[in-house]
Image (cartoon, rainbow, N blue to C red):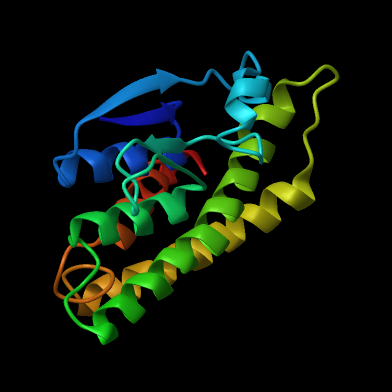
Length: 180
């Protein structure tokens, strides 16, 4: 059974979605990022970047346990392990990886920053109501979702005509669009 180190965030959701879609048995270990659980020395052995999600698969590629951190790396590992949601051809896999990296390098960081400056910074003491970063990140998130809208206007799923780990990676962030 895979151990999932998780907190309910877009990055956590994408891995839990993949585990469910791939019908893999797993146990959830909550990593409360508000309390600093991600800095626990035992967790750092699994995820040296102090971030969740992370997994430990007792049945790794060579039969020995393997830990995997970073949500995109976890999605690719699980897709390769199961042979599912990664496409059937090399062209399919290229498309999946392009859109997965688009989410990991664009939507995730930009939406995360937008959320920070729109939701958290104004609640600080003293409040940080900063127009430039709010406008900058909100505009970039809107641009990125425009890219996604154009892609989905021409394709049933982001990588083409099949559901993939790229779709799973995007869903958590896109579901929060109104708050970004």
